[in-house]
Length: 590
DNA sequence: AGCCCACGGGG
DNA sequence: GTGTACGTGGGCT
Image 1 (cartoon, rainbow, N blue to C red):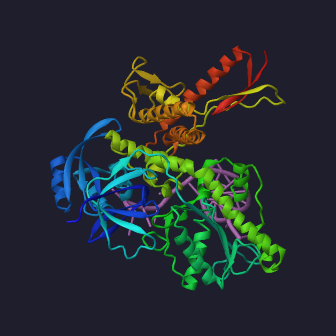
Image 2: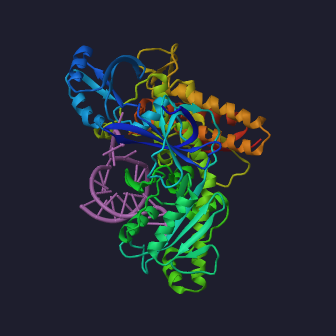
Image 3: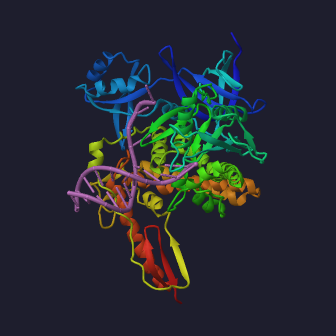
């Protein structure tokens, strides 16, 4: 028997593999302490997939389920939108058994409904174990020595017993940004025939380099023999820099797919994972995402679309917005002429290429702290969270909260259900008073919706027909009623977020360390964003907690509140000139 | 008005 | 991978 060891690490990513027909969860991390340069892959065989079954008849259902060779059947009581019901928790052998069996189970005459059947296994693990990516974890077990496939120093570790989540601040991670150039005399380069001509790197540790098949007088440029060599340098650099995060701009859709196609043509292996695995492409809706095991690939483009409100999201536009300065730019249709020029224009192209990689690093430095905080709050991997719409972030946060509260998660709506759902009516808009106004003040209501949800207890589990003004809040115009007690699921969750935010803001004012202040500011900002997008779950048609009555009631209270506030403002000498959902503008005329 | 399709980013 | 998920604006009918 080997002695039990403990390892502490920052949880970067998670997945599972199958060994002897059994699912093995893999936690990818960066070790903390004396061996902080080492990666760890911690393996947990003990977790099993499960679903909930809502039976018509419990005993009959148990008999039916036994026929299906499931691992375990337990009777459990769970709250379903405020109502306690008896469910059967059905444990299965392998995650893939869930899609295989759920329809069969659903079709049993003893079964009303199958629940929580579409929660990916690794997400289930994070939720049930109380683990948060981008936070520290302590595991016990033993080091496995057969790590033949690992490229860098990677510790393979077999977990014995439950992993322990630890309280920790934002980790400092190594981030490597990259950008590729390829060109075509007319239009976008075609991966079938147009080679990659340069690859640029920039890290948050000062590393800067451009590899190219042409030489330069710049010392940041390293010339290589041919494109095959260029791609090998790409792989080598990622291995030697050994980053926790790899960032690019539109790299899910352009850079990585292009590299993949060229590498396939030239026979270059893209074994970029910390476990030695090849880069993989995952279908995520209408776009693909490039996955590198154990390193988090963050494409900053989708994050920026959600983070900033702009007309366009080119790298140049985003850079200007965040840095307040123009970035060196060569229009796409001029890259070819620069490349064949071989003179000053080629030198300019090298500069531009490196500049793009550096810009990605800078944008990342600006954006990643917020994404990482959101990851720590939502509790799903940064890879996923950075590609989620805000509504999805809210949904996964609520799924975790539902687990903590002992609530069963609503099922995703079917396509037919979605098309039958009504979209939300907007907020109040007052047409602007035309003219040039002076002494303008803005009354900000952006946090209006979260506070309405809390103060009026607007939640799918509190809406009712059966009560009066004494024990219910009644929404103006629409007339929907919400029980004053008990506190609903969503109001309770938002309440906790806002209380946490107040706590952090207080710590912020008390802190004298500017760095600490900055970190706390990012934290409270992440909480604010989450709280403010929370109301969206009620009005977005494909969400689990969709409830149009809640959405309509919130906007009705909002309109009511804005109008009343505008009347009040008039009493104090303000003249409202324009209002939208988030607030109103007024001039002051004493 | 309602349907279908293309687009975003990247070079 | 307990997969397959956007929102919108323009042109056309």
